[in-house]
Image (cartoon, rainbow, N blue to C red; front, side, top):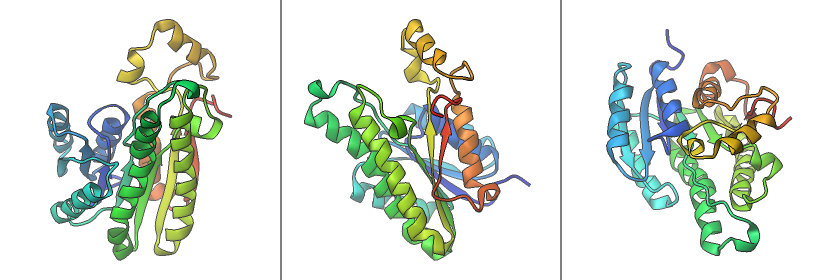
Amino acid sequence: MKLLEGKTAVVTGAARGIGKSIALKLAGEGADVAFTDLVYNEHMQNLEKELTAFGVKAKGYASDASKLLDTMTVVDQIVKDFGRIDFLVNNAGITKDTLLMRMSEDQWDAVINVNLKSVFNFTKAVQKTMLNQRSGSIINMSSVVGVSGNAGQSNYSASKAGIIGFTKSVAKEMGSRNIRCNAVAPGFILTEMTDTLPEEVKAGWIEKIPLKRGGTTEDVANVVLFLASDLSSYVSGQVINVCGAMNT
C-alpha cells in the first residue's frame, strides 16, 4: 500500500519548481492532488497529465493565494471536486530582493502578501474541513533565511520567519483536533530560478554547505512526504531544515 492512498492533498504554487516536485511526490504515493497557481497555463495542464499518470485524480486551479476571498472560493471548489482535504502544502512564494535602503513599499508588501498572507489564507480556508474530519497535516514552506536572515532579503526573510511563528501557533491551536502543522526550511535548492545565477555565485553558495552540493527539489519533496504521512504522526509545530547542514 502506498503511504498516502485514499488521501487528498492541496499544493499551492505548484506549476513548477519545488511545488511541482511536491505534487508529483505526493501523487506517486497515492494521493489525489489539487494544486494552484496564479494562472492556469500550459505548465498546469502538463502537470495535470503527469499527476494523473500515477492513477490518481488531479486538477489545477487558478488562484491568487494572496487574496482571502479568492482562496476561500477555490478551496470550496476543491472540496466539492475532491470531497475532502487531508494535506495542505503552502508553497506559493516570490522574491523581490534588494537592500533595505532601496526597497520600495510595494516590494515589501508584495512579498509579505504572497509569501505570508497566503499561508494565513489557505490555512484558514481549509480549517473547517480539517476540523470536521478531525484530521489533517499542514506543511508550510519557510526558508533557512527565515531562521538566520540574509542581507538583501529583509522582506523575504521576514515573510519566512513569520511563517515559522504562524506554524507553531497553529500546531498548538489545532492539535486537539488531530491536526498537525509543521514548516520546512529549504536552503540552497537547485531550481529554474537558480539556473540563471552565474556559476561563480552558485559555487560560492555551495562552498558554504557542508555537504558540498545544492539541494534538489526532490530533497524537499521527500521531507514534505514524511510530514504528510503517518510516519510523522507525532511530529507537529516543528521546523525541519533541508539545507545540507548550511544552517546548523
